[in-house]
Amino acid sequence: MVTCKETRAAIIALHKNGFTGKDIAPKSTIYRIIKNFKERGSILVKKASGRPRKSSKRQDRLLKRIQLRDRSATSAELAQEWQQAGVSASARTVRRRLLEDGLVSRRAAKKPLLSKKNIRDRLIFCKKYGEWTAEDWGKVIFSDEASFRLFGASGKRLVRRRKGERYHQFCVMATVKHPETIHVWGCFSSKGVGSLTILPKNTAMNKECQDLAQKLIESMPSRIAEVLKKKGQHCKY
Image 1 (tube, one colour):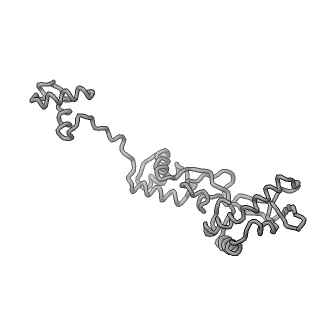
Image 2 (tube, rainbow, N blue to C red):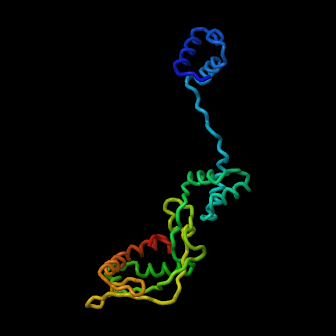
Image 3 (cartoon, rainbow, N blue to C red):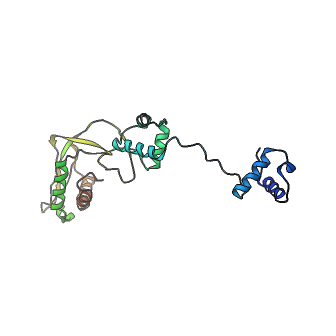
């Protein structure tokens, strides 16, 4: 039996004036309301706690560790592995638990594969040219390979990451360069200072390309600082 707040208040008022539950009404609801008032000092109905969680905090921590070992594992795969640890939960529950910890499914950023030597060389380079200005970089000719392929799985890859982990080494899709043909396009001033960018083969240099090249040159000091900040690891550039 569900009672409104006014009815419960009236029952408690009669109870305070000496009336018993049987005097008020011969129903179990009366005794329940009086008992609740004696124990909690309130006429408000205690809200139900809701459906109990299927996992404990310890089991939730285990799920997080499983996910962090493999950022690209799907919810269904995680649910299966979690089940082996004694937690019978759906992929939907897995997603909710990981969201509680800030782990959101996102498309992996494509970045060059970095070996220990690559990281060391990046740091050496950035420390050497850390004091250079955009004007200094405007006097440099840049070149790079034009062809790339994905390392490992091709196409779109989803990973779970927290805010700020877009370029974490376990959250990126590695790419590898093919050293086939180097396409170098430059636009030089009368003093021979090159402002250069890498363009697809057979692309004509125009003002838009020159503006892009200039933006790249001006960003070099920021790029250097970011690589140093990330200790040679992947960054947004």
